[in-house]
Image (cartoon, rainbow, N blue to C red):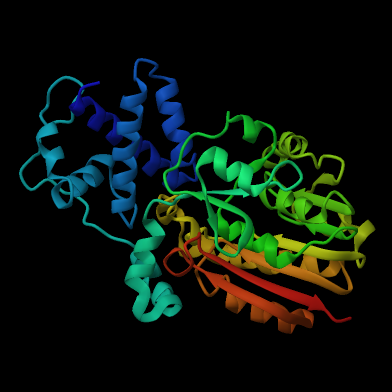
Length: 386
């Protein structure tokens, strides 16, 4: 592909991402994959160049732009002037730039979220939010049941992550899904913040543990490793597609015999978990959230979040905390986690839960890329006293 054609391809991808963000459609990564699946003529260098252009424009725009062209023009005029001459109207290229043609200005935070970000970060808001939209490194969690940290680090050229005994980091992401060590279950791709959630949970051998919002099982695998294959681990979710992705991962990691999966019906979770109510040692509530802590991996999430959606998420989070607490035995622990940097989903939600449910707070952590070098998270650990 010629450079103007690459630019036009990036604009077309941006239009699809913008439409997806407006309607709750596919994520940017999925859109990119689908785009090139229909264009087999594009080589690996073409795909990499187009993806880089599209994501540069996504990171450039805080609010959802009117069009991919407006986003790309804004990026070109503000930061990438070498792109301007590619708007030349040649075959498969973007049309020439019109006089006073509208374009997007640079931004970090959607306007309506600025007060919340200022409340969270104060005078450090700009560098913290800038770190939120910069490209993330690739973090790994070594599976101690299948490999040693030293062996994986040497094989991949990865560096240890301070404070995480099983954590490794690759500053430059590389394809790993077909690596022999990955296929052998020696490691999983998992951000350091997610690893800290499991570390704070401190699941132990012999315990009964519930991962209430397990999804595809990233944190389930970390809990299973901590349990060393001994105990009962129940992974639940209401999303069939995500839960169906888990068995292969469990098998690869060598913990399939430990983990029981349950597909729950929304709003009927309590009755479907009644058999374990009041008996569980540890419940992890990795709740649905705004995803503001993962902007560096999914920068188009800034375009998807609305005040109305955030309000709905707050209600879901409170309901799931209540459900998780109902499963605990006296003295049992509940860990609430959200990949968010918003206080309404973090400290405010945790304080309300402690008061509402008579839970005793034991530990909290508020993480961010700027301060902690990982995705943004809020984590709270509680103990049920009665």
